[in-house]
Length: 130
Image 1 (cartoon, rainbow, N blue to C red):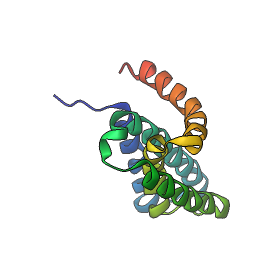
Image 2 (tube, rainbow, N blue to C red):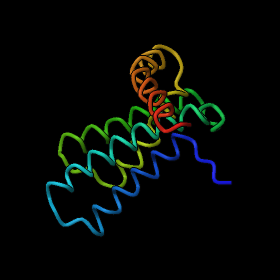
Image 3 (cartoon, helix red, strand yellow):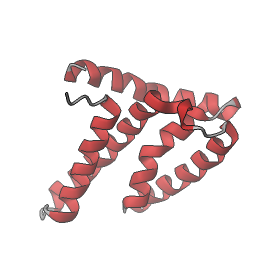
Image 4 (tube, rainbow, N blue to C red):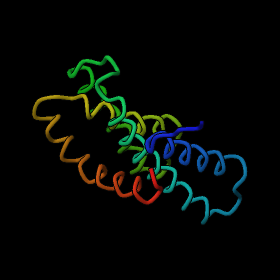
């Protein structure tokens, strides 16, 4: 049986879009749409994965806070420069997990940031019949 959670499934969609952009897609306008699909699916997939294995990752809350801040800085720079690359793509998948592990005031802020994405994930699960 092939069982895929919503987070992993969205990461597969994001990786597929990235692959198509880099290897097959020639139309620049469609490539831009696929880039946003890839980033959106990667972000939502990361949020979905974070709820699946969040605290089981074995990372301390302090380490997660530092790593998530660093990851968010790289992501912001790539989005601002409009040049999403593979390292930032990987970080956008991992950042929500790091954000979910963070405790304290920053963790509460991260929870507020991730709440709308949790709602989108819930809607996608229902839409896809998961």
